[in-house]
Image (cartoon, rainbow, N blue to C red; front, side, top):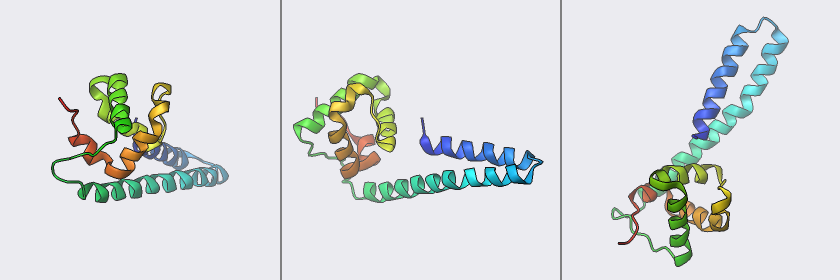
Amino acid sequence: MNVKAEIDRLIEQIIALRDAADDDELSDELDNAIMPLESASDRITAMEEEEEEEDAAVSEEGELEANPHQYTALQKAHELFGDRWKGKLKDCWMKADYPAALAPYKAELQQLRNKYGSAWLNAFEFDG
C-alpha cells in the first residue's frame, strides 16, 4: 500500500463530500479534516524528495558494504515477501512498520533505508 496515495485519495473523497455538503458547519468540519491530511501528504513528499537526493549520492554500481546482520535482514525480507520483496520492503520502510516475522530485523532494515535508500535497494542483488 502506498501511504501517500491513500492519503491523497482520502483528501479527494473529503473534498467531494465537502463540496456536496449543504451545511456550512459540516463543510467547515470537513475542511478541518483535510488540513492534517494535506500536512501528512506534504511531509511524505518532502521525505521522498530527501530520499531521492540521498539516492543520487549512491554509487552507480549500487555497492553495499552491509554487515552480516543487515545482509541477513535482507534475506529474511526476501524469504518472507517472495518475488515482490523489494516493493513490499519499501512499503515497510515508508511506514517504519514491519510484519512480526521481520520485527527482529527492523533496526537493520531501517539502517539500510536511512543509509542507502530506495535507489540502492532497486539495484541491490544477493551474492551468488
